[in-house]
Amino acid sequence: MNHAPVQTASLSDPRLTRLRRSVFAYAGIIAAIAWVYAMASVFVDRQQTRAAARTALLNFATGLNLHTEAVLADGLGSAQAAASHLEAIGGIRHAEEREALRMLRSDLVGGAYVDALFVAAPDRFMAAARGDYREAASRPPEWLLGAFREAPSMFVGTPIPVPVNPAQRVIPIAVRIAAPAGEIRYAGAWFDIEALHRRYERTLPADAVIGLMTENGDILARVVSGAAADLPMSTRISSTERQHILRAVQQQPTILEFRAQAGSAGMMYAVSRPQPAAALLTVVGRTHRSIMASWRERMLKMVIVASISSIMLLLLTLALQHYAKELDRARKALQGANETLEQRVAERTSQLALANERLAAANDELEAFSAAASHDLRSPLTTISGQAGLLELRLNESADPEVRKRLDRIHAGVRGAVEVIDGMLSLARVSRHELACEEVSLSGLVRQCIDDIAEQHGRIDIDSHVQPGLIVMADPRLMKSLVFNLVSNAWKYSVGKPRVRIEFSCEEGHERIYCLRDHGVGFDMAHAGNLFQPFRRLHSATDFPGTGVGLALVARIVNRYGGKIWAAGVVGEGAAFHFTLPLASAA
Image 1: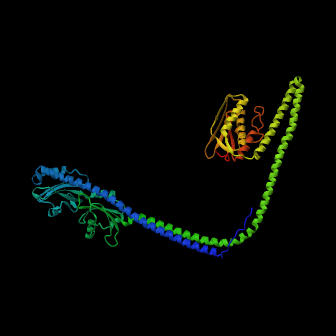
Image 2: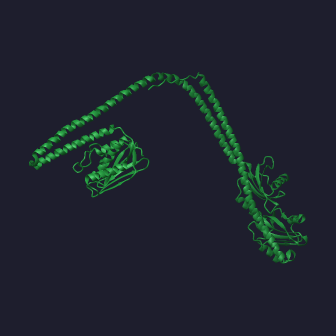
Image 3: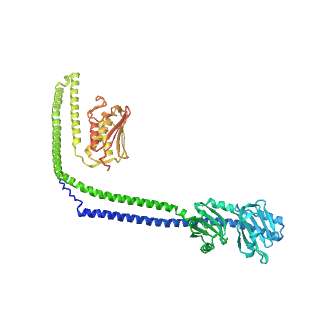
């Protein structure tokens, strides 16, 4: 392993000088781009905010206009109906006064906005209001004389007080009706200003104005909120503004923006003309300040963010400059460390090679010891077993039961010792075995082991449930050893039950958890820590023969695949062995 010395440069290097200048230049360019983008975003946002306000005002004016049309149609329709009823009983001049006033009152069925109905001719006037007010006169009142002088198709008067309640003010509006010999006659209604104000106040936005205005610029009804009190709709707008509005408003709502006088609040208006009342205008306005309030907040946030970003960029630039200086200071120390790096690497490489050689030698010695132990231990055991067999043949039938019992114990001891030796060798081989990687069906191995054990012991009453499709990529020999030892263990501790039941399943989650469960004698959880220790048993060898190596071998195999194994059991009810194999990926 070769490591080339690290090359460093001092700050006197022209490349580092150019780098420092480039950092400042790029920082300035980035800051300029950020501010240009911020200002462009602020400008576009301002235009979008104004456009949204225009749309909202137009929609609001259109809705309010529909309401005004409905109110006018209600009141003027009732007035025209009353005039028709009067003609049916002799007309305004010849009808009996009490009956005519009663008929006017009975036709007053409009909503809360209509306060009275009236019918007028040049020499006759009748009116009936809600409550007790009734009036019949030989000439129209002063507020209606202008209609007979100019004879318009629709007359809109200035607000007047109600005779019986001067504090209450109404708007008189009348339409010209058909009359014989070209005579001028009007039918109209009084519209309650307070009722209109209440309606407007319920829908009034912040810092806004809602008003009803004549073509002459007279304000008939008006409600304001907040800063909109300082707006041009005070009592009468100027003739210039009135002409501006009338030219703009034809058949659809229009947006207007102007100031009434220097220093007053700038306003944005939506003006609409109700139909068929062409002599009226519905006006909805908001101050520029309230419209642009949200935009100003966003602009302030944008400026703050841009300022903070610029400051952070400046600090970052200064930090880079400081880093460049520190880099030069560290150069000398790095050069000194670089001189000894190759020597240290060579020393560590030599040490690692020596350690590998020692490890290989230790493995060879362990292999030799295992082979020697197997041979040296098996030879005397074979001799003992052979001599006991010859002695058994020599005695033949003449041996008494006690001798035969002792011979059987010798054979059993030899078999047990051989099994222990085989277990020790198996544990050693598991740790040294080179792992293969093939597709292995754990489900198939479990079913094969159950079938082999059932055939070997001549029992067919095994109730098994094996989840299909449990496949891993692992070493086939180790997986077979793992499954065989678990299934054999489940069989061994279940043979005393009327029916043997073995289950194998898998839980999918954060990781695969396999489980082999039996319904055998179980075990006491207080001794669960000894289950996977070599040659440690929880049950008597007389009742359940074995060497105590099987579960230890299973644990070694699970550990080689980076997994863990644990068990749960209840005495008399069975046991369940759970294990994971993280390094044996699912196929």
